[in-house]
Image (cartoon, rainbow, N blue to C red; front, side, top):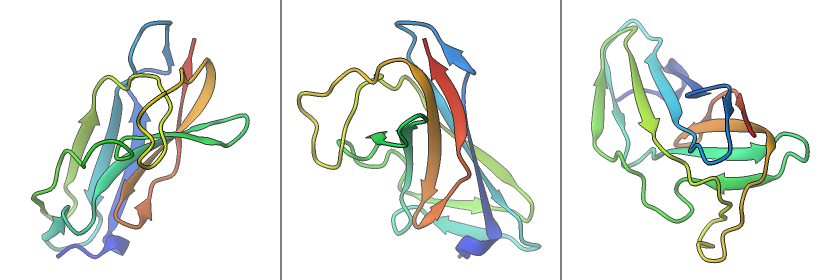
Length: 130
């Protein structure tokens, strides 16, 4: 089993800026930085994305607020291997844990993207909504 301290998480949006009506894609790269092969248990360490408003640092959306994690099986990573996981087409609407109705438009501006793997959190990526 991969210990969280040997995994590096990196996130990015598919583009620096999304025009009105374009739905953002998010990519998380998971890298095994150890010298040996290991397995990530995604059932025990769910993978998720969160978006924060850059100006207010308010959490405005999380992909597991209203949906179960999309990848739940074990993933095997060889020593030094990176694997990418994508979330395609964020709706540009807000959510909160178990608050999935009356979702508001996220608006425009600069946003921070975080990736989570269990308790491990990536450094933020940035993107803009026009």
